[in-house]
Amino acid sequence: MSSPRVLILCYFYPPLAGGGVHRVLSFTRHLPARGWSCTVVCAGERDYWVKDDTLAGLVPLGTEVIRVSGGSALSAWMRAGGASGGRRSGTTFGWLRRMSDWWLLPDSYAGWAHRAQRIATRRARRGDVSVILSSSPPESVHLAAREVARATRLPWVADFRDPWIPLAFRQPPTAWHRARQEALERRVLESADRITAASRTHAEALARAVGPRAARVEHVPNGFEPMDALEPTGEPEHFVIAFTGTMAQQPETEILLEAVHDFLAHHPEARRRVRVRLAGPFEQGYQDRAVALGLTGIVEFLGPIAHAEARRLQRRADLLVLFKPYGRAFDTMVPGKLYEYADAGRPWAALLEPDQEAAELAHRAGAAVLPPGKRQPLAAEIERRYREWQASGRAPDARPPWLTEYTRAAQASRLAETLERARRDRS
Image (cartoon, rainbow, N blue to C red; front, side):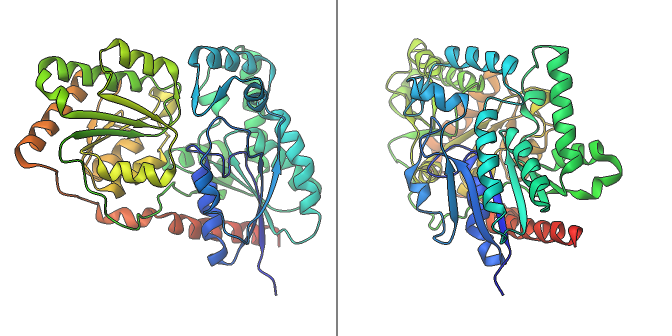
């Protein structure tokens, strides 16, 4: 008897890169060991501004991958030369995003989702698919998956890596747009057989939203792939501050740069020893700001690097810095790199509101939780860690013992149970 198959509808999958890739990639890596075969319907190999070809080597050979190229506003902009190599103009992108909020609902990937819906429906009708799983953002994948489920009468699990972005993270341009987005979200929540969320606080909010059917909502956290080795060690001649992740629409990038500037203004002798390495796609304005602050030669924007190299950079660091977009709308967000930072075992500072779920996890992992939007506390933490490094050398590694609960394999086991419950709901 063949194993059950899950058809996963998502936009981001290797060789595309960025934070949205790793959750679905990990599901396809670990679900086969839990008895599930995987088919992925995803974007084309050139349909995002960030790529990591090394991630494609992590896709299991037995995974069926069906790519749907083009169709999104982002891919059209890229083909017109709007972004490449992990660098883009924040001003231009912000303007285009505001325009898309007016005309493209629920998001600028809606055209791609319509294409993917047709292809996923044809694939599901072959008869060997047991459950449909959609993972957002973009939110349009859920609307596409809903139509696939309706056409094939298959159970459907809607996975939310983040809240419904056009409602939670961006201000809809009019009351009509807000009402329309709310109606689309409600349609998804009412139709899905099961709902999963990457953060506990978001899962609780979704459970409140669905009311009597709250038991359908489950928390499947983000997680991390354990590092194979503890090496490499640090750079003895340099005190390395590092950030790994996307630096786009992230004001805290400037807070970090300004904190480094303030520290060096008080301790100019440290300019020979301090190095700041920022790995990930970025908007050009942040690099320009570093130059304006006189940080040339100290701050290095590495751009997108292979994920394994980013993990090695985390291990080399003497101080890791974590931040995310701030404001009450982002309270539920728990970045995947939070678990990676904890696994790296290095000292780290998290710029988070203290009452957030991410701040609670960071505090449990031993991070210094600092207020976002303020440069002075971060500058003070940099000084404290630098002085300790001067006095005693590289700090010893420290990993929280509870971290094993958050491996990607453990989360895939939780998802496998959810998929099985979705099957039983329809039996």
